[in-house]
Every structure is written in C-alpha cells, then in structure tokens.
Length: 298
Image (cartoon, rainbow, N blue to C red; front, side, top):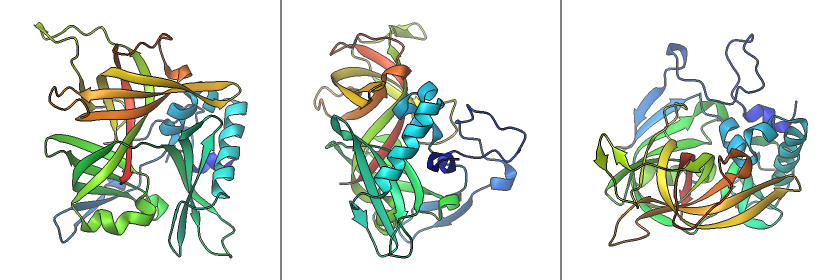
C-alpha cells in the first residue's frame, strides 16, 4: 500500500474491493452529516464521504493511475510534495506542493503535520491547478470532511452575486477560520477535467442555441457538489508534461457567456490527454465534459 491509497475512499463493505473504485459513494443513513451554523449565517456540515480518487484520475488519466507505473508515480510525487518547503502553515499543519516537469501551474499539494516530532506525516493530498483568475464569491455552506479532522472542505455559495457555485478549498487546512467568519471572499477558481469531448449541441428541446452558448450544471455521476458537467468555449491551451509517458493540456474555458465581460466566468482547467475523446484542440471550439472545481482565498 502506498501513500495514495489513503486518499481513496474505502468501501464500508469489505467484499467490494475493486481496482476502479474511485467514484465517491453517496451518503447513507449511517453517514448522515451533522449540521451547525456560524454566527454570520453560514451553514456548516460535517461529512465523511469526500475523497480525491477521481481528482487524481483526472490529473493522471484513470487507466494510468490504476497501472503499476501510475500508482508508483503518484505515491512518489506525494512523498516529494510532503518534503518541500511549506507554502502555507500554522503551528500544527503545513501545506506543501510540488510541480511537474514543464509547468508551474499543475501541481500536487500535500497536507502534512508540523513540528519536529511529526516527521512530515502526510494527512492528505490532492491535485492543485494554479491560476490568477479571481472570482468574487459569497459562501452559504461549508461541508467539512470529518474523516480528515475537518482539514478539508467543500464550499457552496455564489459567484458575482449571480450564479451558484461550489468548490473544494485547497487552502482550508490553514484558512478555515477565515472561511467560517467572512461570507464574501475573493476566490481563485480553477479545475481538473475528468473527461473532455467536442460539443455538437445546436438546440435544446427544439430551440436553437447560439454558437457561443456556454453552461454548466451539477454532475449526475459523482454525488459531490464540486463536480460539474459543462459546455464551454476554448479560449487557449498549452501542452503540459506530467512525466515521460503522461501528458495533458492546461486550457482556459469560458463557462458563462457575458458579452459585456468576456472574463465573467472563465477558468483554467487541466485535462489529461488520456481523458480526452478527441485530439485536435482549436481556439474558439465548443467543448463539453466534466470537471472538478477547486479554489483558494486570493
């Protein structure tokens, strides 16, 4: 068993041990979340069902992740991240990160214990996509992950006082107090793609849609609030190297079309080539797929 195995959600039924069991299980009565409310009317839920298996599958490609080479590689990268100088820390917890070969924007973050006695023990790890895109956000609900000592959380609310949005907070272990005490925050939003295809959508229920039509909606296959299906417009792309046998693209995608503000809701998204159903990217093309949203306080 490697480090990564600790970040895949284990089935409560020991007979259901499958290599492809990366999808997160829905809540059951025995895992019904606890609920509280902060002084500024932010609902806080405790939940024990979050994991990063699908997110690492998006980063490396699901087949590669489940191969011997992929499993060894991800464990080595998590271990390497854990010994880097912290980018955020407090007396108890550190957040460390490591980049891949030719991209300072595609990384792995690790949450480790602080202090000389801890030896940098890894508590969790996840893909991290660096971005400069900032979105004004108002928090309505925080879903803390109780199985990692509430050091990770999904944040639900709205962007630009206009559209609903949820993201995994990549800095929650350090900034949880700020998330709980300030409803309005500026958030750097980015994403990891789980699948990507060309979009040939021309109408919805018999009504024609414009060539630059964009939208996103909750994903129906993964029962977590930070996963979305989308149709968007490709603004830019750049190839990224994970290792000698694994490549992807860092792309910028428009998710809401607002003529007055072209950057109203555009995100930087990493997609592994293995998870793409086509090969020829063209700026301005319509694309569709599924993604995992993440964010941090700007």
